[in-house]
Amino acid sequence: MARIILITGGNRSGKSAYAQALAEYISGIRTYVATCPVIDEETEKRIRKHKEARLTSSWRTIEETKNLADALKRARESQVILVDCLTLWVNNLMYEAESQSRDITEEDIAALCRGIIDVCDDLPGMIIFVTNEVGMGIVPENPASRLFRDLTGRCNQIIAGRADAVTFMISGLPVNIKGDKII
Image 1 (cartoon, rainbow, N blue to C red):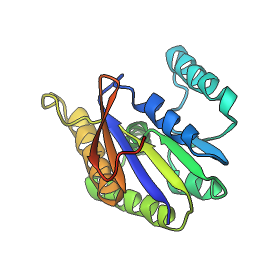
Image 2: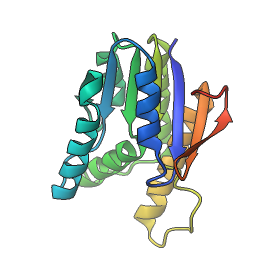
Image 3: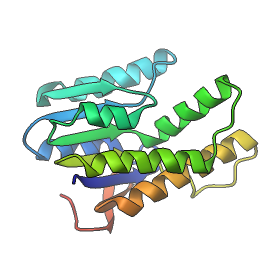
């Protein structure tokens, strides 16, 4: 059964850098599961920057925008898997549902998250999930934004509930909120 770590926080709080440092602390095969699709020049630059940050530490990369359970299975031989990030994954699922003129609900996200946890329970090593804390601001003014907040909140609750450790990043500083301090 994999040890699950959830790293959450606001935008630009240092989540990804902290997650990468944690993963690089573990010896062995490392796999980075990237959920961000290239949608414009700006995201392409961000993705390139993330890839460059991993060049010196022998990372394997799996780009998977929707089927995280499958991506985790493909990384089975890794000692550490870093999934960055759940927030974009939820966004991608919402976009897919909208493009297919169907709804996506909290129950759908909950089922997908439970499927991810089931896969994690069959894997060795450590799995680090990065996500954004989106529920600390004002209530969004439109239905799509409120749905995104709710779906992401449900996802975060389910993964955090199973996680062995949860770290909340604030201004680049890790605050341990569940389990033992990681590093």
